[in-house]
Amino acid sequence: MMASPINNIWSASAPPCPASWRNDGPARGDDGISEKRLRRRRLRYCYAGAAALALLLLGAGVLWHESTRGWTPGAVERLAKAVCPPQTPRTQVEAWLASEPFPPEMPAFFQLFHKRACPWQGHRLEYEYHDSAKGIEYLWREMGLNPDDTGGCIVARIPDPNVDLFSPGTITLIFFFDRDDQLIKQYVRVWLCP
Image (tube, rainbow, N blue to C red; front, side):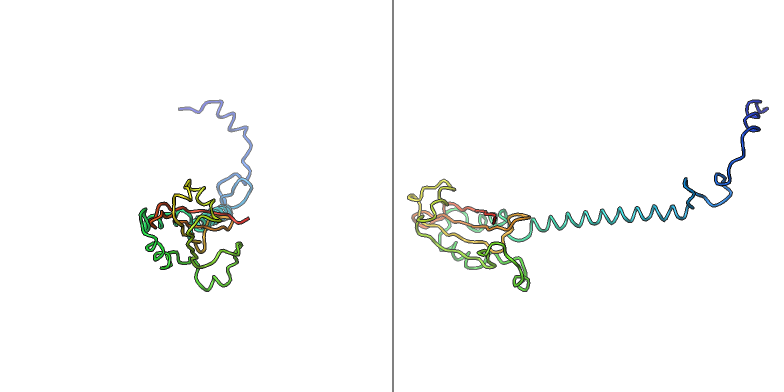
């Protein structure tokens, strides 16, 4: 086949390619950078992206750990309901609380330096029995119970509570008993420190 006269016209009148466009030298990018430098630049971007992704995953892991560490209200409620179901005698509940069921999640060495925002927030379980609702009627009201129809209650303050990611607070576990000292209800009360 013969070459068409149009192709011959274009090929004859086309100016020669500049040296930077030819493939006879080292490969270059659009801005005249060698392929080796271009590869290095792309690797730097990959490393920077991988480092940013690693930092993002690390931050998400730290947030997850901080929000689930220690005694959360859900963990306290699950443990209390599993160990002390309704109709449990008061002596058994007190024996369980005396056995330190909520050990501090923080090692003892760090407890020395741990700054608590709430001064009453301790590292040991504290509980007390109230034989009447005098002074703490609000607890019965929150649970919808009538203080005259029930017996006493045990109020336990959980050590090292984790109630919020950004604010310290307290977790109080309350056991309500009937007149025969049998457990009626339990209640986990959360309070955030201002």
